Amino acid sequence: MKPILETKNLCVSYGNTKILEDINISVNRGEILAIVGESGCGKSTLLKSLIRLMPSNAKIEKGEINYQNRDLLKLSNEELRQIRGKEISMVFQNSGASLCPIRTIEKQFIEALQSHEDLSKEEIRKLIEDIFSKINLKDVDRILKSYPFELSGGMNQRVGIALAMLSKPSLILADEPTSALDVTAQAQVVKTLMKLRDSFKTSIIIITHNMGVVSFMVDKVAVMYGGKIVEYGRKKDIMHNPLHPYTQMLIKSTPSMKPSKLLGIPGNPPSFEEKRIGCAFASRCNKAFEKCFIEEPLPSNCKSSIVSCHLYKEVIAEEIIV
Ligand code: SF4
Image (tube, rainbow, N blue to C red; front, side):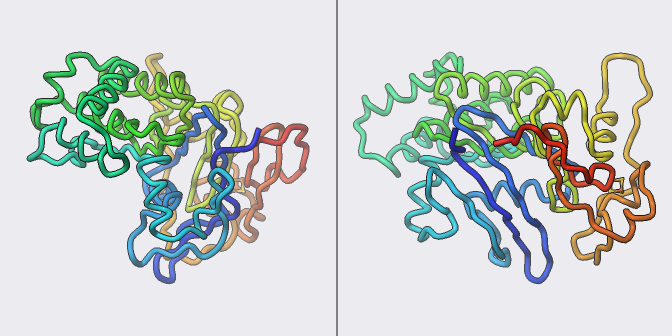
C-alpha cells in the first residue's frame, strides 16, 4: 500500500541550529502513527514542518514530504493553503485556546466551511450534524450557541476535532490533544479520534507523552530523541519488545496501576545547540559503552523495527515497515 504521507531524510534547522535530522516516517490510509519522546526532542517541530507551519527562522534544509504523490516542499503557498485545513487538518493541545473566544461555536464552523466551499445554511447545518453524530457529540444546538468559555476543556477539544474534520481531511495532525485534559476527557478524545479513523478512514499522526494512549489507539510508533528518530516500528513491537535503551526507559517511566517503583530517566535531553559526538543518549544510557561516546549510531533494520543504537548494528530485518 502506498503511504498517504511519507517523509524522506527530512532535515530542519532554526537559524544555524539543526533541530530535525534525517526524519523518515510514513502513514498509510486509516493508520495512526504516534510520535513519542520527552519535551524538547523536536516532536512539535516535526508535526508543524509536515505542513510548513513553521516560525520565520525555520528552514527545511533537505528532504521530501510526499503527500498523495505531491512533494509538499515544492508547492507554492497558495497550493499549500488549499491542502491545509482541507486535506490535512491540525488538532492542537488546547483547542479551547485556539477557538476564538468572542464568536460562538456555530460562527466558527460557518467561517471554517465557507473559507473552502460555497455552501448554503442548510448544507452547513447538515454537515455539522453529520460530523457531530459521527463523533458522538450530542446536544448540537446547545454546543453551537455556546462560546468556547461556556464549554468544558474536554468538550472544547472534541469541538476542535469536529472543526478539523469538517472538510473530511485524509490526514489529521494532532499535537498532544489529550495532555491538557483530565482522565475522563482524555478517554473521550481518544475514542473520538478512533471513531474518525473508523468512520472516514482518516490517517492520524499524533504527538503524545501518554504511553496509555499509544497502547490503546495507535498502529505505529516513532520514538524521538535529540531531533532524530531512534526507534520506529509497529506498536506491538515497540510496546512489548522495545529495543532502544531510551524506548525501554521511556516505557518503564510510565505510571502503572500495579504497585511498582516508578523509574525516571536520569539527566536531561541534549540541547540542540550543543556539539554532539557519539550517541546523543550516551550520558543517560544505562547500557552505554566506549563506542557510544565516539561514534554516532546509524539506523538499522532490526527484527521488524528500525533502531539507532550500537547494540543493534546487525541488519536482521525480514520485514520492512511501510
Ligand atoms: Fe545506549 Fe550506546 Fe545504544 Fe546510545 S548507542 S542508546 S549509548 S547503547
